[in-house]
Amino acid sequence: MTERFELLPEALQGAPKELDEWSRLQLLADQNATTPNFPLFHYTNEAGIRGILSSSKLWCFSHLHQTDRTEFAYSLDIAKEVIQEISRSDDRVTHFFALCLLDLINNNSFTETFEFYLFSLSLHRDDPRQWAEFGRRSSGFCLGFSPTLFQPDEHELKPMANENLFVGKVIYGEEAIRARHSHVFAKAAEITSRFANNNRELVQQVKPSAYLSAMAKEVIASQLVWNCLTGKKLKYQDEREIRFLIMNIRARFDGLRKSFGEKTYIEAPMPLKLPGSVTEIIVGANAPADAEAQINAFLSEHGYSGVPVSRSRVRTT
Image 1 (cartoon, rainbow, N blue to C red):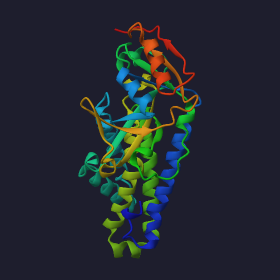
Image 2 (tube, rainbow, N blue to C red; image 1 turned 180 degrees about the vertical axis):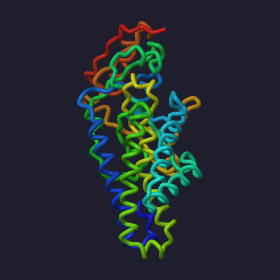
Image 3 (cartoon, helix red, strand yellow; image 1 turned 60 degrees about the vertical axis):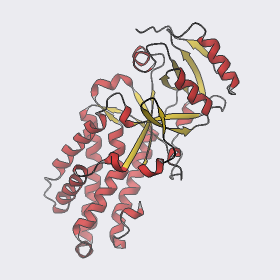
Image 4 (cartoon, one colour; image 1 turned 135 degrees about the vertical axis):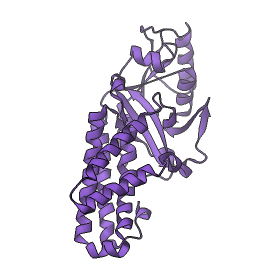
């Protein structure tokens, strides 16, 4: 974070530092509110379940491969509308801060700077829609994961990009997404204006544009991307999705990217072999007759013990 505003005078550095700390607390609060006390489920095919369990790693796919390829742009467009509204403020600093933020968003590609990888889980166990869309029409598998795997207990970034996972509950619909964006931008504008008005001479010395740009970049890096990655259209609300997210600059993922068909993914290490980490495996109703025997043999071979395996009665076509 420091490198984003290290050229600012020390008194002005307090503004992005305050916003960064507020953002960290917001992220932690979001994760705590999302932290489940019940199993979460992931629907996949045979290659997926074998890959995850054999490696004890979650396969986190690029956000570019989500079911709705427009979801990030959808949430970002709502953010732009909120920023436009804030730009009409009578407070001059708030006005120009919003314009600066909007300019950075409109003239920069997030995907050229950052990469985002997601692992999707659902609150639904043995669900018809999940089987149809993600469980290969009931011929795949459903993995149940213990809630202990999703506790937000990390406060500092780790050196390896694939070890920095954040859990977030997806929110649905324009109204909810707009409210989340508004909360963030209003706080950022308040901090930006307060420090500028208390240090007017310093702002003039470094040029207002440099200060406003530093604050705008802090908003983008600490909150905007996260919010856009956890917002979807209202029509998807029945998915009840929880997401594991990995975000970082592109260079940090060099050497970590893998391919599965035409999709790009990275592996995030998880202690899946600890007793109770995998709560159950449900075999799809349309899976081969010997699927239970095959998966039980696989579990035994890879050191998983006591994981119950059952067959779903949900049959989708």
